[in-house]
Length: 177
Image 1 (cartoon, helix red, strand yellow):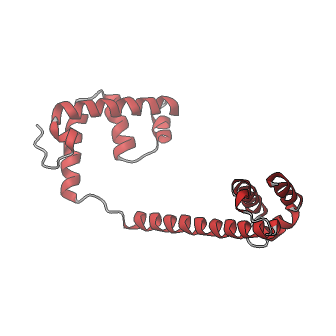
Image 2 (image 1 turned 135 degrees about the vertical axis):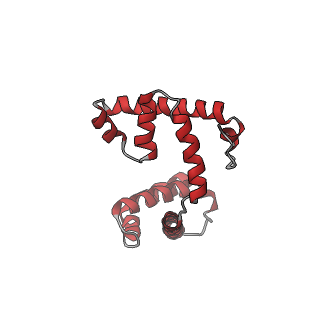
Image 3 (image 1 turned 90 degrees about the horizontal axis):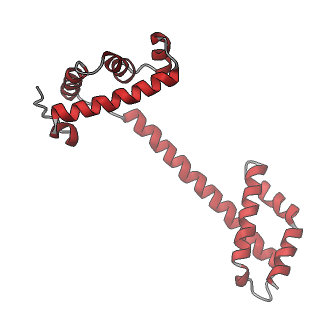
């Protein structure tokens, strides 16, 4: 019985597609909703009562699928709006914290290989792109990316050796030499 019902619903796909297309913004979305509704119908075929019309039952599934689509889209829109608000209100560290951190990093950068300290100063601290650093240095962007990775690893290692607990736990009361 369930196979016959599903086969009958598949035969009416064009009508179902028109129904959904009239309620959503694109045919692609309508196609996705139809496919999801067919899967849902196969999973819930046992809930179809003997005297109930399979077409009416499937239209209920389609309406619920369209509603779920709009709920999901609204949730995504709210999340994107919140993310945009967070970006606007994002705060920078206060000047004292910035000075402590920068002073500590500056002291440690002086102990690294010149090529490593140069890329960290240019890319990470001055916020220039890897590509612009590569051009300026006469190396490939891939080489610059590898150098940046190695430089960051060397900086991390040196910060841990120099600052010990401070570097591991992120304390602000830095008493590094």
